[in-house]
Length: 80
Image (cartoon, rainbow, N blue to C red; front, side, top):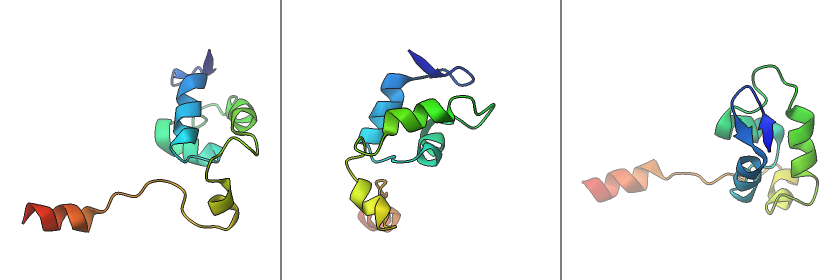
């Protein structure tokens, strides 16, 4: 089922992004643009995320990063 009609984002995609660490509608928007056009899907995204849906919720509550970070310097070191 579509959550965001503007960008064609499905419920499954939102859940997949949440499993990857996106714990807020803003983080979902960064991952797939859902909620960034008309905004009518933001409440649905919030409902899908819920308080217990984020596997890294504790990190987010502490203000620590929850999304996977790419280590560019390590990649550059390996290329050299």
